[in-house]
Length: 621
Image (cartoon, rainbow, N blue to C red):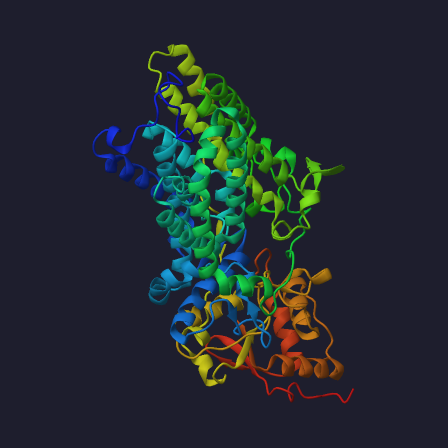
């Protein structure tokens, strides 16, 4: 198989040996890589591990709250037989289409016991840690199985893929994008489809894996499929491997047919909900031009790297969670030199692999730049290929900058192949090896990750933690924190998650942080469109604005509370803003002026609401 290595007759380079020829006790190497990957992942997430209850990710409390909510909903789903792809607990009374969001259904189900026992906070940091470690380990296994002879080379490539700046950046809240292990696992079984006589078995396995990948990271799965298509197309067109591709095509196509049928059966309901279910939408809730990679970002360093710690970090990305390339000049140069060196010295079969891998990297790099070229924050009028793709299905829902994460895998493969070639030539001059070693060090050491920054967040009040709220709200009744839950004011959503994780009676809440309909031209938007009353409380909490309340405001609030079916609102002693300090006193003043004096119970100020009656008029205006 020339995808794996050249045949002995084609080159002096030896083919990648089978596991039996790699030496005894491969499990020792596997354990070492697994230990290193887990240790590094724990180091990156260590600040969360020290206090998962009282601290959250400083750069992205909103997404962390959303994923914690999903984990709590996983317990609720299993305990109440609820629909995992649609919920009525958020955005009352309309609900939320979770299939159109990132539902991570496999994770919420598998980790439900841990979530029930330890809470969504612990499940969140556990999955985040395992995602980073598992990504590095999965890439290591893939590289040593299909592409390299020396496990040290596979380890180098695997650790880079698992802890590249883009994936560490997405560890600021994204349980979907840190699941980088999905790509090598899918690639593993795509390559195995061509094995004679096993297309049915391998097609079934790949179909199941695609269903799993869709439930965890649908956008990442789309990128992986696109990368596979580009690789196979280029590899099949290169003269050296054209005949091999033609011979493998029948078996490959048969396996892909089984894969398609299996995945379609398993995903029929979630796909229906995603594309045609209630409260779905087209496109995305984000601006694709804004969430595109700055060309200069490829040559800069992430703020969460050693180089960033030394003062060389760049902030060209929309936020610290979206620093998806940030490879630095040395690594970009090393990658080009590695690709050229491999091409010049490889046998024809291996050269096809290098060409196909490089083509994938080039295509995804250009696509990641988005519809219009932008360099060092200056957007130009130069239209790029994504401009012609952005309105096509699937492309219209993707954020271009994240396509750079595929380039991570390409660079990891080139690094592993180069290291393997050097290790396979013991007679290379010491000077040559020294130059390559220095190049690797200069390129990779500045990219070593830093721990994720965290900050305190408001602890769940006893009113919720001790179940006191059940005395004030009916079964499946509606209750909300003040201010209402949004991406910027996320306490209420995560506290509902903790309540769901404890099972039993639950409450619904208006608003929340999610993607839903309501954007221009049928596209999505973040959260529900604001009504008068929740916007008033948001302005009070976020900007400190205190409005002089009149009966006209009370009538509007009465209408809003009736629409939501709210039975109670509460204000805890401490509230946390995702990106700024919130003005609690302004919220309390606004609520008291609108609703009257509150009750004090379980560490919160509580206002009971009779839908359609409260708040009552006071000034006759």
